[in-house]
Length: 333
Ligand SMILES: CC(C)(COP(=O)(O)OP(=O)(O)OC[C@H]1O[C@@H](n2cnc3c(N)ncnc32)[C@H](O)[C@@H]1OP(=O)(O)O)[C@@H](O)C(=O)NCCC(=O)NCCS
Image (cartoon, rainbow, N blue to C red; front, top):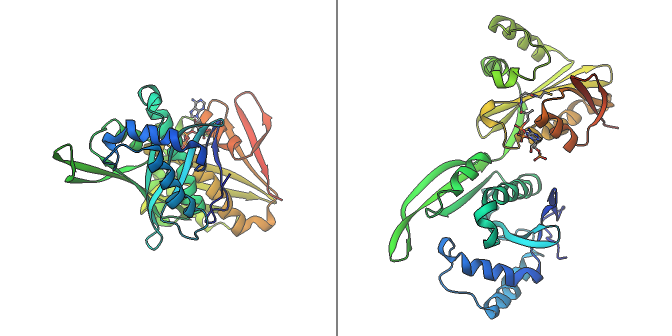
């Protein structure tokens, strides 16, 4: 398999699905799908096998050795079978943004359109944000497949712009819709976050799985929050998407162990941000306090399946289970 010089990790997995550097052997399937789906692509004639060979030889083959290629293409696999392809294109290394491209095997579109788009987006985001440290990724779609938009929005993309009558297509001008997502990052919690964190903590969707079910009062929260920020035993961060806070993670230290509490604004549940929040939180915490900590733990209500999954996916192991809640831990030395 070819490797991209600009990536340290080459293959990205979700269950049996993966994206890997585009494979020569997949070029004719890709050609076929492109020809079948020409109506939504920037392609104005049927590709022949010769065109495709030429494209792979003169364009694709040259991408692998570049420090800053203009595009990075992947085969999208189910097991070892290519069922789609896509990548980051028009990569702007100065402004750290790129457009996302993706098409799947045409026969999968009817039944599995949402599933494969969401899976692919979660994989390509890891390339964009974790590997290449891009700031923003976006889709540029002719306004011909409105069923794509809710899929993008469920994956945390927001509709950024409609470029009206922007493309000449089928003898008429059609609009182009741009959806975008900016990189999430953590920043330390500030006193001015008291109201936001109160709103989150008192939301029924967050309360549902809280270990302590007693009602939270604003003045108590304000005082509790200020004390947490003052404490040397607490590391508290907010997850930001651009300038919007979307979740929080806290590490409370007890001797050489740190206990995690984390949550997302309910608006952002179900989009995969939980994993990002926990992963980034642990990285940041290890950098700032890791030297004194040997173990990170978290209590999870057993019915809180998204949280159980997030912990398990990041390598946490279960140490205790009292039938209602379980303790998960990660050794960090
Ligand atoms: C816990 C929390 C941070 C999870 O974040 P999230 O980004 O919304 O989680 P997701 O919906 O993306 O789900 C995470 C994983 O659980 C899986 N999942 C979600 N619901 C599931 C269900 N009902 N059954 C099985 N798996 C489920 C998802 O498929 C995903 O798995 P994957 O990463 O392998 O794809 C968020 O739900 C939250 O803030 N909850 C309220 C506060 C809270 O419970 N905090 C944790 C206390 S320990």
